Image (cartoon, rainbow, N blue to C red; front, side):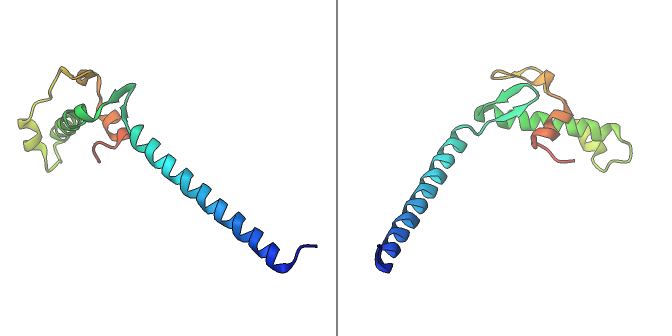
Length: 109
């Protein structure tokens, strides 16, 4: 028969193993999350280098939409800024819509 002390030692070993396993899993997920952190907009993947230009493009789209709304406070400011067309790296900005920018979390309503 196992004594109380032997049972306690086994329980402590199992507890330590489960803590180490959980810590290892958390570290692995942390590394994988940072490596796989990419922004999708529509069917395009936005690289970290292109992200700022895409955000500016999304803001321009939002300003243009606000300018079309006569009750908007930003109507005059939005009318002054133009929408940038073309490519930011491999991202096709002319295919990016305001709805996609909102879904990606690059702008808020």
